[in-house]
Image 1 (cartoon, rainbow, N blue to C red):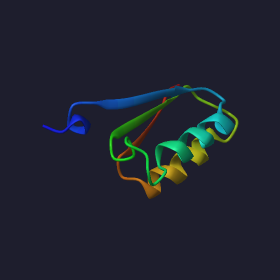
Image 2: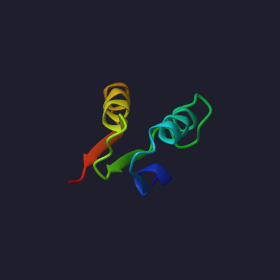
Image 3: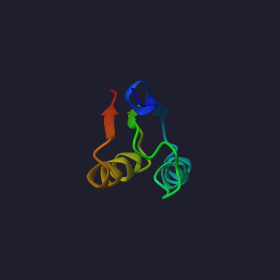
Length: 70
């Protein structure tokens, strides 16, 4: 069984849009070893545009999931 089928990546964020954008560019880079892993973003109700950024990436990458907490 491949490692990507055994491992999920979870990123927790709150008002870290700039850092998350840099993280996404690294995760989804052509040579990234984890670009095909299941990735979940747990957004703790950010108010800095994080929602829009994550939703934009979710529309591009089917392995990315966005969960927004209250």
